[in-house]
Image (tube, rainbow, N blue to C red; front, side, top):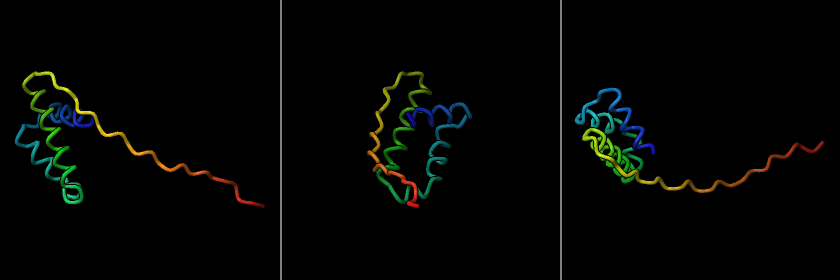
Length: 79
């Protein structure tokens, strides 16, 4: 869903395809820390952007489900 929103915002703001690469590549921290995830995310955004530009339907790629977090029980301090 995030790629669809990002692609839609690029269109709403009138950002051209060549500039989409420029904007996405400006996220250097994400690009440097998780290059594979960054490239997959970028590819998906561009895929959806181009489908929207051509007026074609696109099939959203499901995002991975978040891992369950450990539950934390808060207790009142003993008196």
